Image (cartoon, rainbow, N blue to C red; front, side):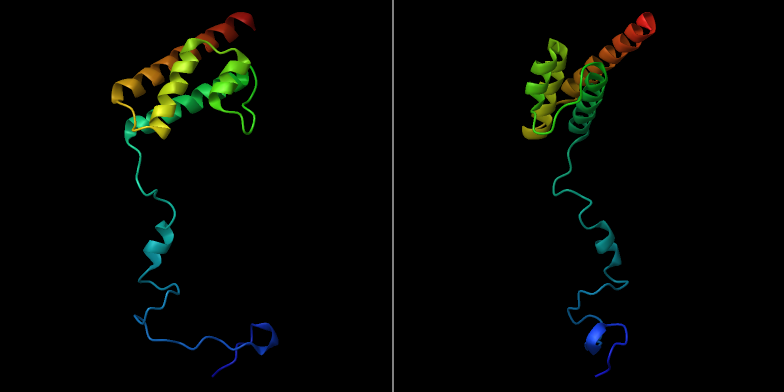
Length: 132
């Protein structure tokens, strides 16, 4: 057995094994699986679900600028209640909940969420340019 000069206390190095003997150490054969491990979820969400999530994230960013950021541990509904959001924000949150926790949303529902947030952003731009 050879000794490793890089380890303290003269710990023994692992003996070399021929490739293909169940060795899980990095090699060119399994590098691709190592690089992609943990990046892909078990089930990928559909595009309408992703659109609904992004619409809600945009809404939350808008409301954080307008009122206050959402606190850690605060549910989306409690946040909307606390800042006095209108019904459109509740509708986007409902669509997002179905996309995230339910069986998903249709393309029409995701488009509705995106258009609601787009209209709220346009109102915000108009409001800020008129009152600055």
